[in-house]
Amino acid sequence: MNSRELSDRYVNPYTDFGFKKLFGTEINKDLLISFINSLLHGKEVVKDLT
Image (cartoon, rainbow, N blue to C red; front, side, top):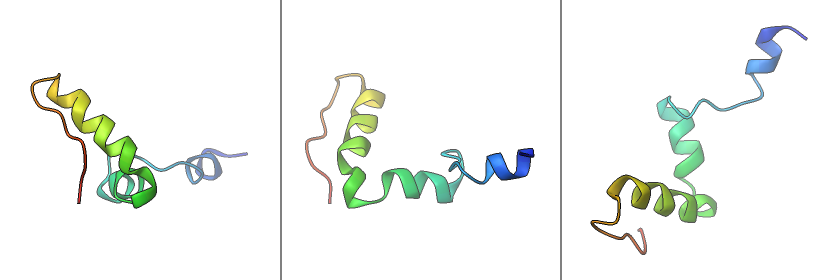
């Protein structure tokens, strides 16, 4: 298996497409809320997103 085949299996979260694919869907809403809350270090708490 060459490196091209291996790299096609994963989404790069550092790209716009990858970030939106991981965090921009309703299925992953809880993941996005958790990610945002970790960036805020408890100063604010996100409970829901629209």
